[in-house]
Image (cartoon, rainbow, N blue to C red; front, side):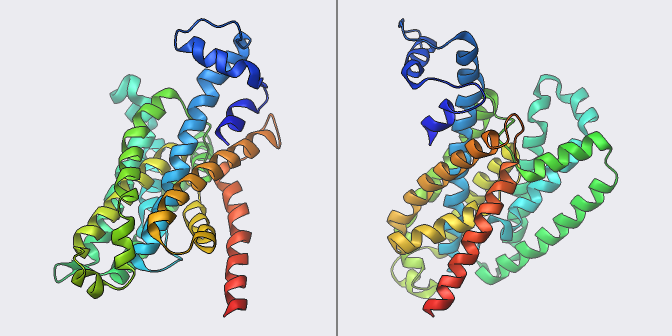
Length: 327
């Protein structure tokens, strides 16, 4: 999918010359190179876009798989913890305050919306976690209920903010809410790779402990799992990864819900295999969806969040129908 993403588009990139241009960019002389326009498109647009898509897709899918195992519920994703809603409030606020932020941030203006969106996602998730703590322990159902309440409040805040937005701001807000990799750049990749990479490492190493937790919290404690610490690590890792993903690409739905459900049918519930496979399939799915979004109606570009939702909703309905028939 990565090779397809960097080769296909309005400006075709011949595979035979692809490696030569990459080697030339690294300072190695080679006779096989792309034309200057093709090389500029490859190195400045498609490579950062494909890399960011891989990271975001992997984190979104992996976060969904980890949260479903943590709460022992296949319908859980980051949206239920308030993470996406908090990021939306932050991003819309930054878009509305664009002039004020531009005068204060100067050259860092491009990072204003992602930065404030990430902060909003982190605050919303931590608030949901704190509200779910009772007697010194975080209770899964309470955390989910708190997240649902925070998501509802965030949706109300976004609606109120949109009502006072100008036409130009409204277009930016709509584009961000629908999700896109169109804003990918090397600067965005350099900034996003840190939180996204940390989130991947934090979540991928918890497969064995999640297997024990799926037996029940009491049983996991008897088997040596510090359940409260595991919950904190997973929720904070999810907030870090999903917050950064939503901050740089907008709202992209159904990746964290559908990918783990599909792979669970093939691989079973063993999280030691499921987490890694989910990250790989999430990366491939989002990069593939991006290729479709920018080629199917070229030169126009479809919002990738709307595309993943359009593909994910029927797939999820089919999974529910299959489960009902088997039951």
